[in-house]
Length: 120
Image (cartoon, rainbow, N blue to C red; front, side):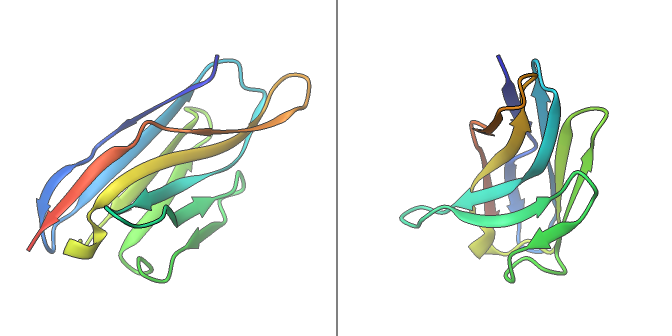
């Protein structure tokens, strides 16, 4: 069974930094895009950043220049470095990955979510 374990959320003051990590475990043949989404209270889940297996990254306009997504394919881990945090970044952050099993079937999986709170 494939699982994702997230870590790194917490409370930080505006202007501060946090680093989120998400590690995948289980019988995975290959991992395609990995990334992060977030959901603020009362709002829909939105894309934050994704990264392909080749390292191409895509960011939401609201985080460009402040957040950096990276991945370690050997460790099956994706990271989100968040700098210059703003109160509007407060949300539950969800790790996401698309992976293939050994039959070639493509699947999606989400992490359990980690809360990031930015105080003003």
